[in-house]
Length: 119
Picture 1 (spheres, rainbow, N blue to C red):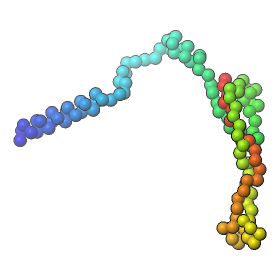
Picture 2 (cartoon, rainbow, N blue to C red):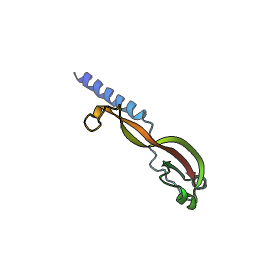
Picture 3 (cartoon, one colour):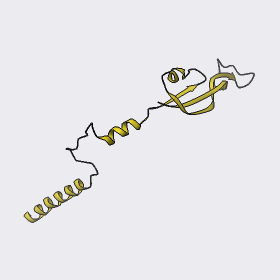
């Protein structure tokens, strides 16, 4: 019995060691980032701020962003339904009494424009 318990303890320790050795995490706690490191400073200066603005049905404008120094990097537009209307399915249908005969159709169309801005 004593040999079996010793064997099980050794087997448990072995499994724990396998689990710990299979971790991909980085455990270097002494690693510090220096503010004067030229590689980090050059990477910070090369990064640009990016912003994606979506304007639907001409509700807004990007003029404030352009005045603030943002530049348009990319612009895509597509047609979009701006409003919907309810109609009866046929002439004998009463929308107020019979909700099953109501059809919802697009009323006004507009454009949805997605701007990718960069500063």
